Image (cartoon, rainbow, N blue to C red; front, side, top):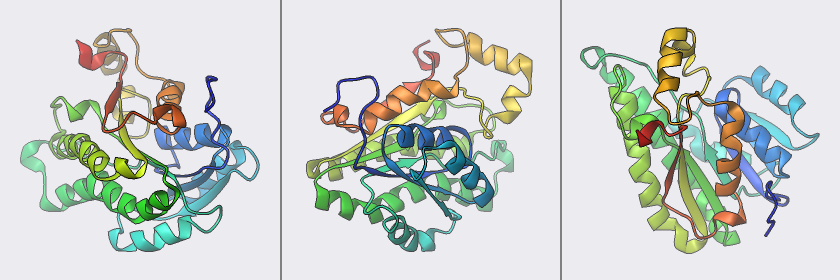
Length: 253
């Protein structure tokens, strides 16, 4: 086990969903730079190509796929094992937030949100777990949220999905950690991503969010690096079923 700041992930294969932008893109780059081979999954092929150009040569394989197509997940799992072998790290960074008021939520919008944010992380994990069990080692990192713990305006369906992620992380850990598969979640605070563009485009709202943290600022992409590398490495060999809030202390106040 490496005791340096950057764990050595050589020999590991990671699948990262939502890898075309935001924290998913950051996760794919960080894992690739730590030595893992990365299968980058997202809808936009052009964005995945630009990700490959930023990563170490030969470390990223782009796999364009619409994760909303739950019926296609078995094929996605099979394709993910072709470039580098069976994945043993899985990072679920894809997500959607429709930001609809409770009175305006439609059944269609509810289903889209709960499918992509909650159902897909489970079923894709389920398809990749057999390869991890065969190796006796695996790491699954879900993405929780401030809304796993708090209610925000316009966030009922998103909050329901992220509250579900927190409990699902514990349940997945109970189911699979005995096979060497550690399952944890990262709960980002306010980071500048496509999902939070509306907030950061309003300087007053962005400043108000920063003031609610203990640190006094919003998150930067590199703030996710350490927690992610920890959860994806041997250093987390006795850590499972946990939700780590990476929020500058927002939920501590």
